[in-house]
Length: 432
Image (cartoon, rainbow, N blue to C red; front, side):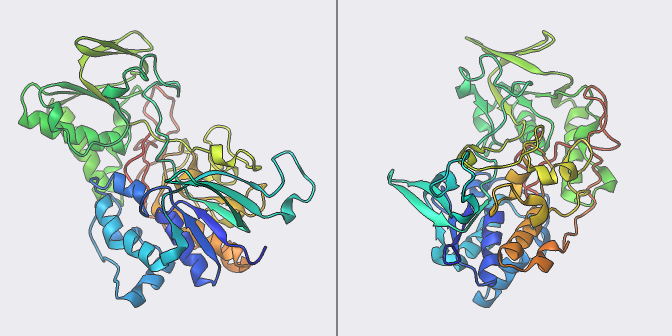
């Protein structure tokens, strides 16, 4: 199997970084990306500005690969997703060249000739990666190892508070969105509701508040599941991500100014559609009426369907890789308090399979690009046989000022801010 490639699923920030590390070590790599270009998921939220600065958004091996081409790392500032792509991720994909195959969807991964049940000879068989391209052509690729860096972007959580779509949510799909909007002008003069407590929700609330200030008659309601709003506004002066602290401060101001109505303890049970729009009904019977549109920004979850014929170990609560779950539990940790999670912690019962990046965190909304880069550095070292490098901890995270969610669900959680901080580098697009 040594002649077979390491197949990486997903050409996002972590997938590209994994490829850069493996190429640097002389390994044969193939990156499969279902979008029509690398970093297609990041491009989808390109209008959103990150609250991590440039030095926290590039990987060391990627920089070493790019610098001989004349590229230089941006030294400061907070890019938008589009700038992250154009100034770093797209050049990195170009440097990796033909190792990236776009328009290729992975539909399944298995062991050659072995379904999940079969023990005999399992580890001696290569992986088989089943794919379909944009024309519908199916293929089977053999791999000596697989790194799943496919993320969680494709599977947003619903508005329903119990993890399933609320009654009527599917039927009202034309009036419900699950991403931060790029343009809200068509909602002027209407009643818009945002569901969620993290940074995607906060970004959207602020965008809508600007519309409300410009367009009289625009009403914005922000629904929080928790019984307190204390955790919504970030770590303030204790947050070493200043752009994130500023985001929380701005959110507090639009609420204090009465531009946005904040409703706490509201757990969505039903969306009733009628001639006047939507009525949103809480589990306790409260109603929010006359709603023209809902932005349900309640986080994302991993899609592990492609791995169903492999033996994987996920935490039952977080759906995160079991080996890192205790380190990333948002009930205990913030994004800045976790320890490094490397090859040893990410190892699966299926030898040679690694789940990395946001997908490795499952539903835990505390992921940072720096953490992902450390993951793939360690995994690449392991796959190259450099076990000393794989075992090293080279992760240095900022102090986020977020203490986690240790309190009761209906009380203020933790000492300073909510754990619903999904920052994919810090990508502020998936929230809890």
